[in-house]
Length: 260
Ligand code: KIV
Image (cartoon, rainbow, N blue to C red; front, side, top):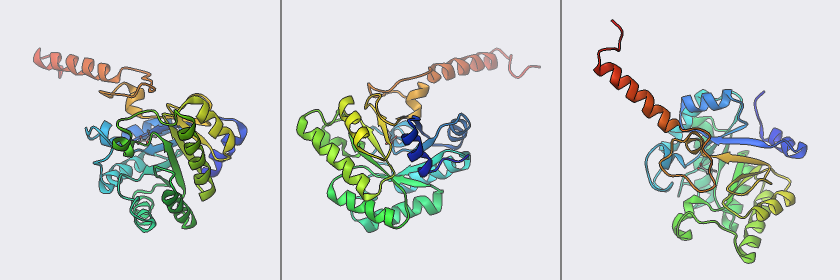
């Protein structure tokens, strides 16, 4: 049965952890969906894992939508969320409405994700939700602010910054966000936020007490050339691909493939 934002809220109430992963193309999306993932995020991390950039900043909305359309064709059950990339929503609620509208209308997204919880972003979330666009929020180490943070550094490590992130999360819930990503913050802060909020928290580098977890799928598969310290690889797909390609190359060079 297709996953909805209402179902995710029910999962939190029932204490059933939410499984989320990123996707950037048709085959990956289809495989993850068939494996039973609850939520698929076309994350702007695709700038790094699919396009080879060193940050998420360069990817454009058109590029995101190109990938999101391919993902949409592979997904039947998972809730499909599309990241709005850097500077396609921060200028004004109108800009955010236009970008989010394109994600829903052109790519078939069921929700969008925005980074940040300062008052202007809270207002933007409120406006999108009022227009019928489900929004997933994202606080803590928000990668689009990498230069402001001086790197992909853990956030919320002092009592003041921890309190700030907690207040942002509460404000985003009040604005109508249906879920919130907590990225690279201390475990006890993520735990506190998870207990305070009624909407599901989905953690990445935020400990075991969130209502769900998300990973960048390239990290999970062991495909990434760099991954953050909190990511876990469940296999060495890069090594497996290299081995298969070496065997194929050997067989071609030895006139063993195709068989006579
Ligand atoms: O872009 C992305 O993949 C993300 C996840 C890390 C949450 O935002």
